[in-house]
Each structure stands twice: as C-alpha cells, then as structure tokens.
Image 1: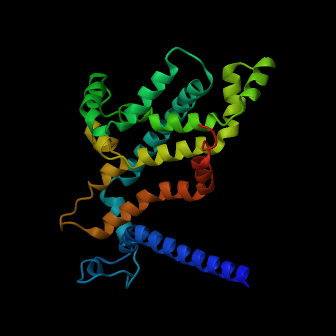
Image 2 (image 1 turned 90 degrees about the vertical axis):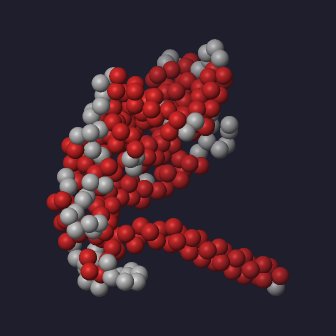
Image 3 (image 1 turned 30 degrees about the vertical axis):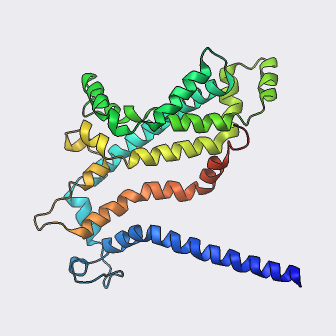
Length: 280
C-alpha cells in the first residue's frame, strides 16, 4: 500500500511539473505565436481596440506586402551567406584549437587557455569600435568578409569542444599513433566522427547567432544590396506609418530557417550540450 501511494504521489508530482513546464513554455513562446497570428490579420483588425489574438479573416496580403516593399529575399541571401560562412569557419577554428588544447603539449598551454577563457567576460560592445577600425582599415566595408570576420572565433565554442574531446580515451589516440596515424589524420578520421553531436551543436548555435545579429552588419554596410535580413526588416517603411502586419510577416519569414534547424536537429543539440560533462 505504501509503495502504491508513493507511486501515485510521484505521478501526481510529475504531472504538476509537466503542467508548469508547459505553462512556462507557452508564456515564453506567446510573443512569437502572437506575431505569427498578427501576420495573418487584416490591418483593420490589427489596429482595432483591445487585444485581438485570432484573425477574423485570414489573409496573405501582409506577406505579399513584405516581399514587395523591400528586397527581403536579397537580405535573406546575404544573411545566409554570412551565417553559413562564419559558422563553417568558426567550426573549423574551434575544433582545431580544441584539439590542440586537449591533446597537444606546448609551452604555456594552460596559461593561453585561461587567457582565452577570460575573453568570454569581455562584452562585445567594448571592442566594437576597435573591430570597426580594423575592418575599415582592411577595406572590408560593404563586403561579406567584413561582416563575417568578427564571428570566426569563439572562446566558448573552443571550450565546449575541448571538454567534449577530453572524454575521448587517450589510450585510443596512442594506439592510433602506434599504427602510424598522424595527428591530423586522427583528428579528421577518428576524433571528429565521434563528436558529431557537439560539432553540430556548435554549428547550429553559431549559425543562429550570426543570422540574428543586427548591430555589426548595420555598422559595416551602407549599401542596400549588402544589408542582412535583420537590418532589412527595419527598412520596411510605409507612407501610412507603421504597418504591423507586414512587419510581423517579415519577422515570421526570417524565423523560418532558424526554427527549421532547431526542430530538425533538436535531439542532436541536446546530446551535444550534454557531452563533455564526464571528464573536465
């Protein structure tokens, strides 16, 4: 009887926790859901008094207006090029640096690693002016490279991959070397395939972060055809003032790539975030 009561209490407790989690999730997602609903509303309903959650008449006019009032597809292409390029380079740099910190011995390795970690505490806004001057002096204003270059290296991603690499058995690495496997071959053919989840997590987080960035592309571009999508949304100006429907429609279109990546690789992301916790 006591065991049954404990099981019932446990089930009730789990049910309450799940209900709380669902409520929290809906609360966090409500602004996004509301924005999507507004994108399907007619202008008269959006500007009507009170809170209108459900469209009385569903329409796609807001999406047509968003796509025709600004070169939104061009902006999305720019963001896609920047996000993909920066993410691939960051993944390559982070994985190589993590391999060096995890398996190679060189002078002052621990000191260099700690200095690298210390850079995480430096806010990005502090180095914004210095980065702009550097990129400007290199002649990279209004170029894809100029928008990508500041996202090529991430100390957090290097730390994350290093922790994941440290879970790899050193004896297997030594056995591979005995068989004539070089460091680069071991890194490329053995280490990377066994850490796919972490690598995918780093790539997706880098992609989403670069895709959603606003301030840096705004600073280093002054040509309309080089704007990213986050900057381009602010260019949806209308003679009749702020029109919320098309703006919400454009915002919904912008969310599609990141939502697709997240929901497609959700399990891999969770596995990647959990890896590296066995050995530090």
